[in-house]
Image 1 (cartoon, rainbow, N blue to C red):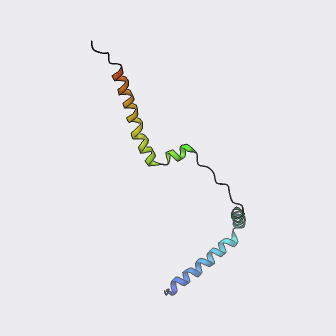
Image 2 (cartoon, one colour; image 1 turned 90 degrees about the vertical axis):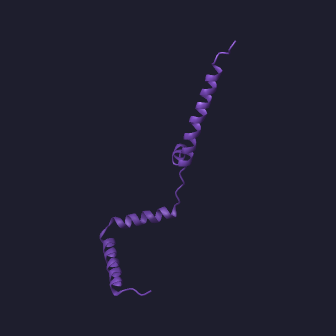
Image 3 (cartoon, rainbow, N blue to C red; image 1 turned 90 degrees about the horizontal axis):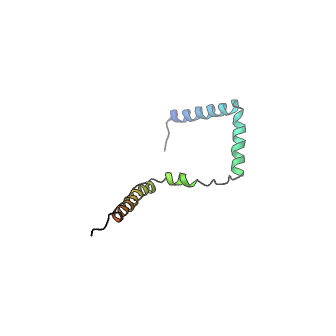
Length: 88
C-alpha cells in the first residue's frame, strides 16, 4: 500500500509534536512510572456487589418484573378464595 507524501509528512509532524509534548510535561514521567508499576504489580480483582450484578442484568429484571407480580396476584387470589364463606 503506497501512501501519499502528505500522509507521511503528517505522521512525522505528529511524532515531533508528541515528542515535544512529552518533553515539556514533567508529570508524564510520573504517570509513565506509575503505569509501569501497576503493570508489575497485578491488582486484586474486586468482587462486584450482588445488587449491582442484579441491576445490571436486564433479562433478570424482566423475569423478576413478570414473576413477582404474577406470584403475588396468585397468592392474593388464593387468599380471597379461601375467605369466601361456604354456602349452606
